[in-house]
Image (cartoon, rainbow, N blue to C red; front, side, top):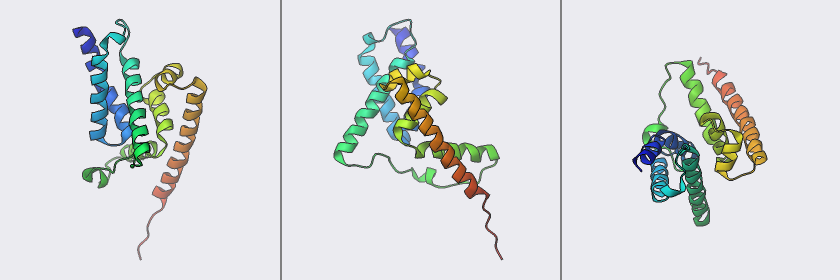
Length: 172
């Protein structure tokens, strides 16, 4: 039993990263991770020892996220929370890579949650297409379509932001 719990606890950083990419808010992401861990611990017998708990935990988290989105849509509330006060302020970047990373993260947050979830599962979390499709509960073809459309949307957003960055203000 302790081995199972240790394996689950080792997945928390990945769960937090995925939750943050879905919700755009640290507090909400932490709540989602906590809900996921609570559900996992209650249903610990459903996880088969010998396998990594990663897919199982991500599946639980994704289902919880979908349930949250459905509740929000039924109530008619805004799905995405505003940025925290400290996040809304910008500071000059020390390196070009920092600017590029920030633009990529902003663009990733600007695409739809289905496409973002598919891209994060495959490109960041390293799941195979089959594993990601299984976790997200969609056919592999749907997942691949979401990834392709998400990548195209990211390219478009990043192309626009790089053009904006290249425009210089000239003072007289």
